[in-house]
Image (cartoon, rainbow over all chains, first blue to last red; front, side):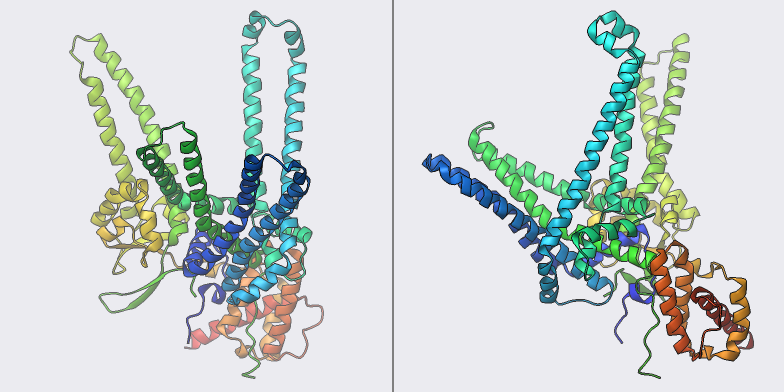
Length: 328
Length: 267
C-alpha cells in the first residue's frame, strides 16, 4: 500500500509553522517543474523591457521616422499587457499544480496549462482590480491624513503662524509641533499595519480563479475575502515567517551583487563611468530576475497551502466519508 | 507524497517509534519567539547593568580609589553575563522543560536525542553553543531545508532531533445538544453502527470540532452531505423527524463513542 499523504488522512487544520514547512516541502519535491514554469513566466516579464530598449536604441541610432511612434507605443502597451497576463498565468499555474498535490489529486502539466490558459485574461483582470483596490485605499488614506493634520493645524491656530512666522512663536509651540509630527507618524503606523492586514486578507486572490471552475476575476477576490475572514493575522504571521526563511537567500544575492561589482571594478572600469553604471545595473537586474525565478514558486506554493488550509478550516474541504460502494 | 519529514527510531528496547519532524516553519517561528523574549531579557539586563555601573562609578568617584580600569571591567563582565544569558536561556529551558523553550512550547515542537530519549545538559549546551553559527551566519536554515533529518550544525554535534509533539487535542470535549443525546440512546437499535470505521468517526469528529469557525453556507452543505452519507453507511431508513443534520451527526458521534467505550470495558 502506498503511503497516504498525511494531510488527506487526518484533515487537521495546519498551524502557522506547518503551512510554511509544507510549502517548502512541496516546492522541494517539484522544484524542477515549478522552476521551469517560473523561468518562462519571468522571461515573459522581461520581453517588454527588451522591446522598449530595442525601440529606444533604434530611434537613438536612426533619429528619424518619429511618426511611427504613434503605432509603436500602442503596440508596446498591448505587448506589456500580454506579457503581464502570461506572467500571472504562469504563476497561477504553479499554484494550481500545488493545490492538486495538496488535495491528493495531482494533475498533468498539460491539463493544468490548458485550464489556466483559458483564464489568462481573467488573471490580468483580477490583478487590475486588486491594484485599483490598493490605489483607492492609499488615496483615501492620504486624503484622510491630510484632512486630519490640516484640521488640527488650523484648529491650533497654525495659519496665523504661517501669516506671521517668527522663531519665537515656533519655539513657544515646540510641544504642539512635536505632537503633530508624532500624531502623523502614529497614523502612518496604523496605516502600514492596516496594509499588512489587507495584504493578508487578499493574499491568495488568484488561487480560486486558478482552482475553482466558473469563478470570474471579480468573484475570485470576493472568494478570498470571505475565506480569509478571521484569519488575517495568522496569515500575516505565515507570510512573515516565510520571508524570514528566504532572508538568507536575499543576503546571498546581495553578496553576489557586491562581488560582481568588485569584479567589474577590478576589470578596469572606473566607478562613475557610463559603462560601469550600465554594466552594474544590467547585472543587478539580471540577478534579481534570476532570484525571482526561485522566489516566485515558493510564494505561489505557500499561497496554495494557505488557500488549502482556509478551505479545510472554513468549508471542511476533504471532510467526507470514504466511498465504500465497492465493498457493499 | 507526504508534506512533512518523518523519522522512525528504534529505541534500545527495540520499539519502533515514528515522529514527524518539526519542519522549517515551526522552527523559524519558535526562534522568532525565543529571540523576542531573549531580546527583552537582554534589554532589561543592560538597563539594570547601566544603572548599577553609573551608581558604582559615582561611588568610586566619591572615594580616593584609582578606578581608571573600572569601566572596561564593567563592560567585560557585562559582555560575559550577556553571553551567559544568551546561551543559558536555551540550555536552561531545553533541560528543564524536556527539550522545549517557550517558543518551542508555543509551536508544539520538542528536542529529543537521536534515539528518542529526552535531552540532557550536554546536548542542550552543545546546541546552544553552536547556535550563533547556525542562526547568525544563516547556516542552520540551509542544513534544515536540505537535510533529510532537518538537523542544523548544533543538532549534528549534539546528536539531537527536533520533532512535532503528538497532538493532544483529541480528547477535547465537544458540544452535544440534549436532543442529540436522546437520539444517541436509540440509535444503536435503529442502525448498524458497527459499519462505521474509525476513519469515518474521525471525519465526524473533525467536523464537530471545526464547525463553529466554518462559513455558514459551506457548513450547511457539508453537514447535510455527511449526514446523508452516514445514513447510507449505517443503513438507517430515515433520519428521525425534527432532527437537523448537525444533531444527527452529534448523535452518531455520541453513540459511536459509547459503543467504543462498551467494547473497551468488555475487552
